[in-house]
Image 1 (cartoon, rainbow, N blue to C red):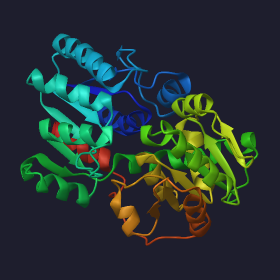
Image 2 (image 1 turned 90 degrees about the vertical axis):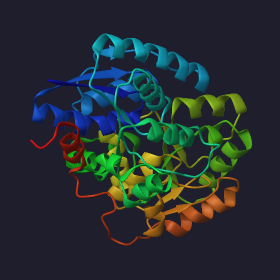
Image 3 (image 1 turned 30 degrees about the horizontal axis):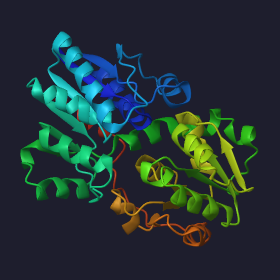
Length: 358
């Protein structure tokens, strides 16, 4: 029986792993060892996703979070190596571009264990982003690279990675959106809880280091929300809350701050928003799955196809007025209908490649 060690640590990875793990259970003939590094650790950022997304309780929870990049990655690497030595997996499966992704890949490859990377080939071409470094390194030590889009395949080929290692599967997040989207529409009560009317608010998420650790950038974002002319609902990441408090950032009156929410409630907020403003990679796609226009508050995006299709626009978050203007202009807009992320069966394609036809 094949043994797969799956490494997760942050919200987007719980979402992606949910559908792949479910497919592994459906197929049978495989043992999955789920390892949670602890990068996201409180209930709102971690446990709720395991409950809602039917993700089994991890066999290992390493409890390594709230550290700088070097300390976090180093401690995760050390702890994961011990797990892999004890468990002797045939494959280590990693997701996305976090420190947990990097630590899992490095620990495995140094032990000569094949690495499979879900969401391979994404590039922002901004080496100042920690996530970009993680993506590049993980892709170049992986044995099997599951690319969600044709652009991702092109990036990998451009970097000299063999075609035999690259597999375009579609995006597992689309699988999740299809599977859980209807549940969100029927089960979530989040709109009533926050007093939000469908189509009458902007949903915002802000958490990236370059946005929240720079007081002037964070202030520009807050002021931009304040000038957009609509109510803004912001599920606030703990990192953002801490920085607002420490910097004394002014919070505009039209901003409704709520605690982080689980996948079901977040999906409902996305489905009913007039527009989504975010610096998250995953939320950009979730906006598209919900057919809601998006403004990305960054210098660039790895999801270039959404910009090309007109569903997303990138606005560097340096000017409050530019942020507000982009939100006002994009509300009510629609892009081109297309299927850049596959047919909603990416998890089956990933598992089929890992285990063979079944």
